[in-house]
Image 1 (cartoon, rainbow, N blue to C red):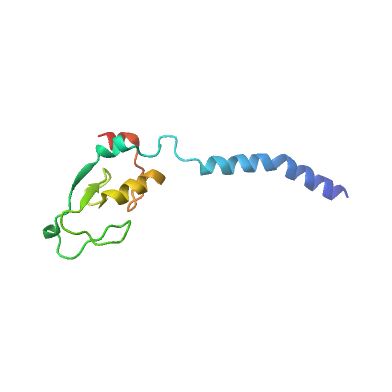
Image 2 (cartoon, rainbow, N blue to C red):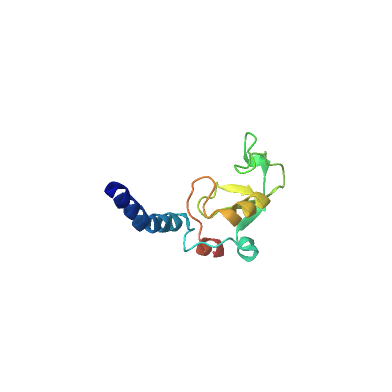
Length: 112
């Protein structure tokens, strides 16, 4: 009986601490907010040029091959990290990192 009461007391006392730490771990970075349309306009955009690549190149997000003159966006982490514009817009609404290298992308990176 004493063991049961002791165990119950420990669980009741430490449960809030455990729950709080789990919630903190799930919070997004304080530096990050979902990317706004205005910030996305500042990203380096261009058209895909297939003549610059020997083989077919595909978007790492949707896995579809780029076609001539597709709208692509290059992320500030690496000039070789480019994606379909619509794919990266959707990605940055729920993620704060590059899909390839996982480097965090902050508001400051997108404002440059």
